[in-house]
Amino acid sequence: MKKIILTGDRPTGPLHLGHYIGSLRNRVALQNEYQQFVMIADVQALTDNAENPEKIRQNILEVALDYLAVGIDPKISTFFIQSMLPEIAELTMFYLNLVTIARLERNPTVKDEIKNKDFARNIPAGFLMYPVSQAADITIFNANLVPVGHDQLPMIEQTVEIVRKFNLLYGEIFIEPQALVPKEGGRLPGVDGKAKMSKSLGNAIYLGDAADVVTKKIMNMFTDPNHLRISDPGTVEGNVVFTYLDIFDPNKEELEELKAHYRRGGLGDVTIKRRLNDLLQAVLQPIRTQREMYANDKEAVLAILEDGTKAAREVAVATMRKVKKVMRIDYFASL
Ligand code: ATP
Ligand code: MG
Image (tube, rainbow, N blue to C red; front, side):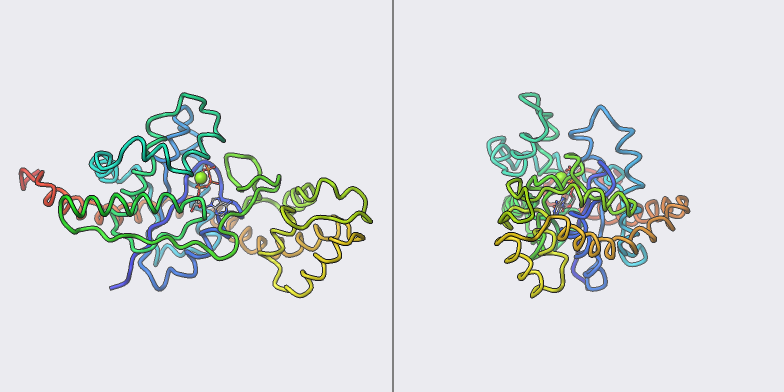
């Protein structure tokens, strides 16, 4: 039997280069070896978008298009929509009893996101507890592996804690999942130099962006604010163009020479940006073409989501039967 992968994305916008590097590439690489469930996390997206359900609905299709565009194959991977598996919400309720509020408030990713989102003191309770819901997403499939970006490591840690506690209290039915973070690009910075490219921060290069839009974003990229004239010595660390080149440039030797040149002065931002532009266009062009093809057949994409959701739900229902049995709340066989 194949090992299981669960991953997902919030339908808060189309997917970007950070997703590609952080998680999508791994999903494509692993989909033959593992049984893979790919979740569009609309319930989680609503935790900080409750006032905007239409946005979440629209982006479900966008995210599905991105999956197909990068090459996640719906014949071997199962795509599904989170809210259509109410069993996940049910399991979340049981898990909430195994977690303290103090522990949730200590979660570093949640802390960061609270800071970025201007909630001030009005943090939705659902937002604070979304790591618990994520534990339910992962464990309802008994996933072994979760390919994610760096920001998600604290979530997997919290999932493992919940699994241990559940197994100890009720019976050993869940596997402790492992995160899979890429060696390079586990956290791709935004084009503005912020630590993370994110749909919500407006600093992303989207997988579906037109070629000229990509070029424009690269030409406006954050570099070294003190590198004013070409002849000035420049800084490579924290310079987004070089961070991206480290990930996307296969010619490491030439890249090291460019870095040395930039540090001593005499190498302009435009030169390195053009180099990055060529490399990124080559990565994005085939993805864009595939995306356009699927966008022309939305019915087919919706059918993929519907079929996948049905298949995923069967797994979730079976797991909940086991959960209720070990929790001693399986009162009636007929219900
Ligand atoms: P939002 O701003 O709405 O939270 P997001 O851009 O953070 O959106 P998510 O849907 O929260 O995207 O993340 C989905 C997956 O993509 C997660 O595994 C996450 O770690 C990964 N990911 C997101 N942004 C990046 C990034 N900049 N670099 C690497 N991985 C990323
Ligand atoms: Mg996020």
